Image (cartoon, rainbow, N blue to C red; front, side, top):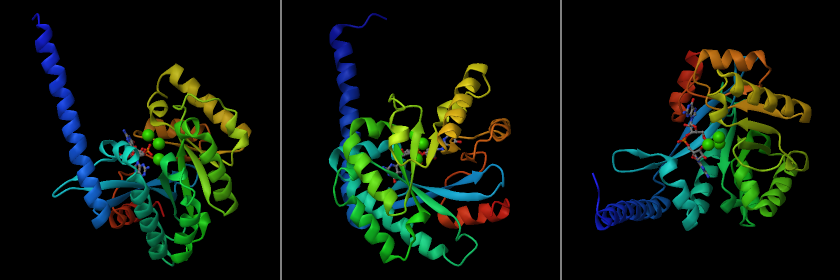
Length: 277
Ligand code: C2E
Ligand code: CA
Ligand code: CA
Ligand code: CA
């Protein structure tokens, strides 16, 4: 069908209007949620591939709507652009510290929690001090907290992130590089920065079944071994992927094969049931 120029214009402007409306709605929801704490944290385990035990869990935030949860893919970018990620991030950190305090003395006490940090948060100079203060408030050892920083955030705001990382490392927190392989950056920072762990992006893990995909992940594993970093494979969905990674010495796996992200109680029940503790 041949569309008139005007028709195509109307079609696109309608799509743009819809996107703007969705954006406005999410922003309003976020502003409200920041006041009322209408978020929920889900946790997904990271399993040590040699011991088959859970060694850490990643905290993943959801926005609570009237009767549904909204996924971070729909609101994190908006939260970053509006600065709302700062109070949201503070809420996440407090929940994580509270959770670690609650787990102390239970069968979950050895689990570390990793949380996602936006470069918008590290650009503020009180990020480090408020994190340290929050850990102290809940009696949490910084070694129990891992901060996941994306490779792309290093490219966007290298100085603030790297300064912050050095302080965090000195205070005893551990640091992982998230979505590794997707950030278009050089490898030069891998030696310069205090990164403990590389998290291989799930897009690479999905390709280990093909010979080209396998070569890429083997190269990443060799690189991290040479640099003395731990490696986590993200997005492990099948037994084949798990066995492939295990045979090549990948340290940890995370993904739907082991567990879906869930609230703390469900996480604990799942870990106990599957013998991951
Ligand atoms: P991410 O940090 O890469 O987190 C992993 C995402 O992969 C999660 O999506 C998780 O549910 C999903 N996932 C886990 N296993 C599998 C699998 O086997 N297959 C597939 N296809 N997906 C899997 P989620 O929870 O929707 O989070 C999306 C992104 O939102 C996160 O990606 C992270 O970048 C961001 N995010 C989540 N929570 C926070 C937060 O508290 N702060 C910030 N700044 N960003 C967050
Ligand atoms: Ca992450
Ligand atoms: Ca990731
Ligand atoms: Ca990701």
